[in-house]
Length: 395
Image (cartoon, rainbow, N blue to C red; front, top):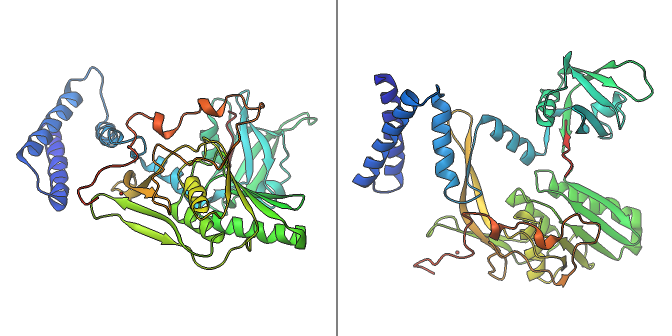
């Protein structure tokens, strides 16, 4: 027991050391930390079932962060790794979009020029085994995690294909798979660019889409539509870069943190990839964070017409801080503001032209949960004394 009391005490001492770096620690803080150590020891020694010490500490950290706002959270090593995959936009894998069907992994589509595509995987294939182990009973996330792995490593997939009597094995060597956050097509004389999220590949994806569509449509190109509907956001620097791509000059977004800390301004550099052509941005209640930065910047500079319904209203900035043990914490450190000084937090972007969701929507956009509906969310402003469906994955 003495050893575990020492662990809790050392954790509290370390925490106090951190507090001393950022400000004075009151005697009340010491008392509360002593109480935490006492509760920790009583739970681990007297709870009806044996508990894991690390899980208790992790839960305490998670509780502290989640009490702040809906977006501050603790990421264990697994969650941190998954977040890094999404923000990098690439991983070692096979290159197939998959979903679950009757307990088996079903191939939605192989991605062009990936190992799965070259191995002959087809839409509708059922993956019944991975490296000799059955898939049945796994969640989609667990199956995808098994299919991902180090680049150049080999995996054997057991496939059941319609029209083929017996399952068969396919050996595939993993390669770098890039998550496409940008899709595009020509709609007559209009370039239609769909941005599903903002990862490290987004800026280059938008620029590539514009080059290809300009080449396809030719001199008759009349305008650009940027579809940000149901885009949950992502990396701030990518939102700035995409906004910058359509602006010649001016502020894109500013951030304001606690007191005098955390203030930044991001400005556009000369060069509009649309060369002054009309731009329309589509948004809805699922457009959040980085998507709102783009919509707000182009709206304030009157560079684009914003069409759709009011956006989600997530106007806060999260900083990911690595922690010992391969985990991290995601902490809200600032609010962001559009070029005109608007705070989007819990307000969202109001479209220039209101267009409700079509009748094919299962639920109306008005019923969609927004930032303002989240428990513990930040207010739009704080007064400073100095005056800021079907689940699918890619393996």
